[in-house]
Image (cartoon, helix red, strand yellow):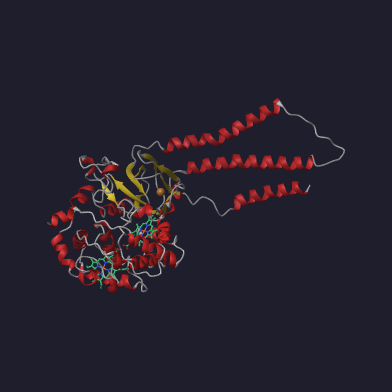
Length: 469
Ligand SMILES: [Cu+2]
């Protein structure tokens, strides 16, 4: 009797909770109300079955409760009952699945007036490509991806020239305009999802998946990577702003076309060398850094990373907190680099420097004793920074091998203490904020810093060096 009552209460509470639940769909902001309908149909079918089955269970528990004068019947087969159950289950399952098939067919049947754009996923960030004036996206090939051509566009395809490259995780879309979303991955499976639009689909390396939707409500929406298998996909966040068509067009103008990115100067080394004279006092004339002045080695860093950091210092994205003494010091130096051209030139010049600092000058952390412990801790870092700490452009991760251990330690601590990587405009530092948390003590930080510092330094000759000769 008690158990039957518990079951009845369970049914009642579940049903009440379903209607009062705070965890429900976010208000919809696209045309896909039919997806909500489908989910509702599923909830009605499963809810109805849940109630019936549990009511029957409570009834059976009560009706056939123990009675010492009663004996159980044995009836292994009942053709008629099984027939009914099979029929009812079939109808229930069909009712759940059929609307989904219809909606899925709609989801990939793109209307003629839809505009196209492309979502590119990579570990661990999003970027976007719009077709430009000719309304046709140019051909791409993953094998063409490089620092100069991060989208891997084909140089010979004329349709690609005016493609607009949005190298950012912030997207803007015009309201009430249907869009076809083409999805491409540079590396592994990803899953592009925006809950308010009720859209969600895998990006599969080697093919282009697509769907469409129409944004119907102004506002900001968050993009998630809902790929659960794999490493750190939860780090892949982005933002979609839905606004007017005029705002959308205005937004597009701030991004370069593919042709414009190709025409960007590689950096003038003579001008860069001149700017670099302002840096020599701290970083040394060969970029070797200076422990006494707390300045890191910058020779051996890639142009793209140097450019990003210098822009961050200039825009107060890095070196903006009062506790970040050394970041602030560097940020104040940005006054000597007036504009983007100057940054580009000095970054090109620094990349051409090839000094390697002697091992005994790099390691200062007397606390770090155990390189094998450092190696074990480094196993998480390899994914992005590479086996030998050499860095990886595709993953936005810089070269860290052969860097002073005190500098590595300070940066890891800065990431942990939210002095670096937490600014809204910091697209890549945020990953490190989360990664730095994998190191649980100062001893861990010392050990991993010493290990990285000890990694063999390789400096590859770049096109910039040849240009200097
Ligand atoms: Cu992902």
